[in-house]
Image 1 (spheres, helix red, strand yellow):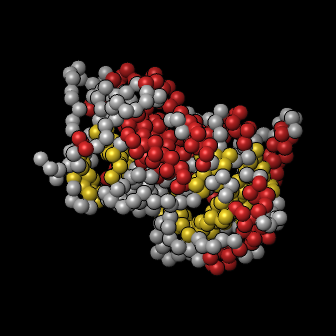
Image 2 (cartoon, one colour):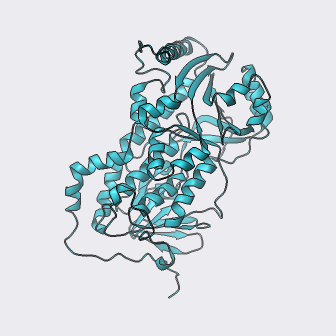
Image 3 (tube, one colour):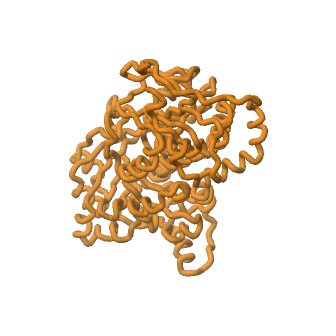
Length: 480
């Protein structure tokens, strides 16, 4: 690849991020992976003044995925990037979270969101289709970077740094960002060897149902009209359902015990509808009616990985982002949020870059800012699995008692009365205001600004007092 053929981050971009600050030394940066995290990283690093190339293994950017959530910690970034109108166009503004019993559809937990979230955190909480979200980020990033499809990375040299593609082409850069997801090639280079996931014992059926079908049934119509996220909790599994795409589709994610032998970790593995229905035999009438409307399903085997000791390769020219370094189980809907926060922190930090000697320190600054938060969110996501999947019995009854108490307290507050219940540590993690403040009140750019105020001068002093010209990104087999 010839850098002169790629789009430069220079003159075509608005100065609306990082207080107009742009790196005085534009770096040539290769982002591996064109998912949500990779696109967000490309956008932010381009806004910071760098030259970005995304390498994507797929032959085309496809319409994949299903429901995804944009909580206020993400929405504040997207709106700062100028994507607020697009977000409003594609999203459904969630009004509440409703936690229900598997057997009788009883609402045991309820947390208001909607305008309350806007008021509390200053930004909305949206339910989206992943493909719509991906398209919005693609359209934001594409004018400012070179996106190369059919460019599968088969090996990485973190010291040069460079990557080799399946075609044999070698692509060089100043910095590599591994945003290549849970099956990351780059992760193994940071870890120092093969890094296999472990089975959680869970899998998830996923399906989309036309909302018009729910509207034709009196029992199902409220699921569309209320615009709530519904979670049915049951022994060994749970079901999440909510509307997306302007209330035109109803998204279902159905967690269940994983009974596959030697199964693969895939978003696109076909599931069996009859087997899906059998899995939830005995669940309440509402669930049965929903499952009867499912035309086809995918079955996603859920795998887990322990937090990494480091996200940065020892040579300081390769760093991981998103699922490649902190994959999230989908029990708290924060996987994409963490990747987008990672991207925002990287872009903000690298807007200060004035010398290549600062690359490694900036990467370790990124890890320092992000590591604890991402790791804590990983653990919080895993906790919900144990909360939701309790078999009927004393522990389930105690869980439901806690959730009911939090629900009654929320209803008191909604009536204009004062809260009388301590919610810290509640089994409904969304009712725990301390946790919500930590999760939804987080501002990635603000965290960088606070870090820089304390550490920035020391980091900038690492640069030698000589002027260096930017290197040209190159490919081993380019034309001369």
